[in-house]
Image (cartoon, rainbow, N blue to C red; front, top):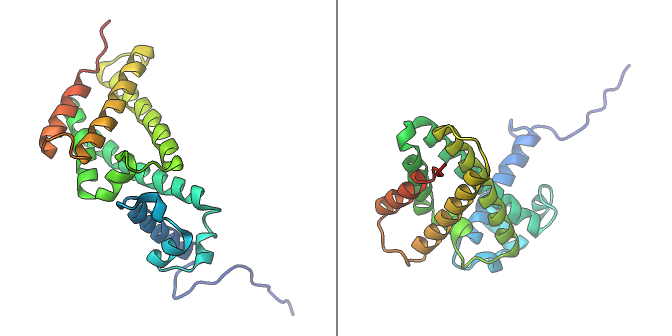
Amino acid sequence: MVTVRQTGARPYRGVQPADRKAERRGRLLDAGLSILGSTSGSEALTVRGLCRQANVSARYFYESFSDRDEFVSAVYDWVIAGLAATIQAAVAAAPADEQARAAMATLVSAVNDDPRVGRLVFSTELADSVVVRKRDEGTALMAVLLGQHVGEAFQLPEDDKVQAASHFAVGGVRQALSAWLAGQVALTGDELVDQLAWSIDRLRPSR
């Protein structure tokens, strides 16, 4: 008689272990966004409080994250990935001459509809060292993506002029949204979208 040794966790209520882990991780990330994107910010983020809000035990935090900094980084990456995918989809669906406005409308709508996202990505009041580093990385990534878009839209090589203009635009968008969310810029959402789109549409460098 051959004995078969079973390894690994078994499904629970029809849900596979990997799916349960992913579901717990998603709850932790969403709870982390709620805490980091609150007025209390990163100072309120503790493993115990996070797990209580996500309704999971502390051991499940450590099945996905080694420490607090890795978790904060993961929350930021998760939010940025969602924003990037949504913006890219909106741009792809828009005519060429309306793509800048589609991108800015999607971004402004995202931070306006979910204040947590706006605070995490743009609020200067959240000065967590990990978030600051991730913002700088995210700005560089968005500049590269914008440079690619400009090159394709205007049929230009992605040279240093295009990259310089792209970094300038992305930094300006970031600062404008930060000021808008802080109430320092008295524009409606539509007015802000118009202004940002107008600025990006003028990215074409002179030759």
